[in-house]
Every structure is written in C-alpha cells, then in structure tokens.
Image (tube, rainbow, N blue to C red):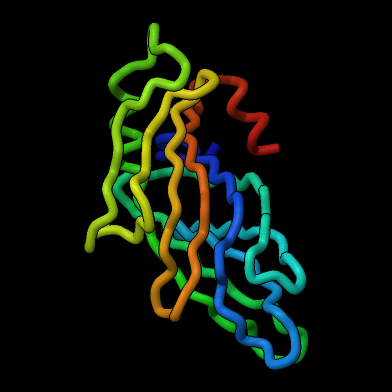
Length: 171
C-alpha cells in the first residue's frame, strides 16, 4: 500500500446523459478520465453513444479526502486528438464525514446526509449519502461544464483499508 493513504474511494460509473456530439458523421465514442492528485483512472470507450452506459467500477487511493476528484469526458478519435466533451469536479468530504460518525446499528437504507446543487459544486440534482448493504455510498449526478450539455451519473463508496476485504477491490 502507498504511504499516507487514508482510504480508497470506489467510483461506480453508471452512465452519461445527453453528452455532446463532436464527430461529423457518427455519434461520439465517450470515455471518462478521473483524476485525484497524481492518480488517474479511466473507463472503457463506449462506441457511437451520446447516452452511454459504462457500469464500470474504478478505485482510487485517497491520501487527502479534502482534495476534489476531477472527471473529464472525452470522445475517442482514431485519426485526431480526442475531443473533450466536458468536465466536472466532486468532493468526498461529506461521504468521509458520514463514515466517521460510525456505522454500528445503522439500518440498511439510512440516509445520513444530503448535498444540494449549488454554485460551489457540479451537482445536477440533490446527492444523498446512504448506508446501503453494509457500505457508505453517495449517489451523484454531475452536470458537465465547459460544454453545452451533458451529465454523468456515478456512485461513490468509501472503503476503509483497515478492512482486509478492501484489497479485493484493488485486484
């Protein structure tokens, strides 16, 4: 394990909604790159789809939970540079704060907190932190910036690395 790692964040990339089209003859071939500090992870490319369903699980080491996670959506091009289809940023501070409250005796489906869309975040809708199936998760729908349209739906989960089962995520 890397030094100074506080935990792991699992990002379930569900889908894109109404992504911009940059190709002249076909729909875009979108993929997403997530960045936190020096770490980068990305989804696979979905061919010819402005409403792609990735259903991908990605994981990132968290050294500082106060550092936001950035995402950039791109259109894969074979001949030219990939076109950027927007970007967004989200933080995991609310998720980590809820995890620190403790999870003993929480009934499944407990809503622990919510984050409203504001000028300080890229949320397209209210985001909820929920204790679900023994895990602390936060559902988010993010509105892409620097583009005329598009949203990305994700679920973020905090993984405590003191739990031995967490290492299965990294394999």
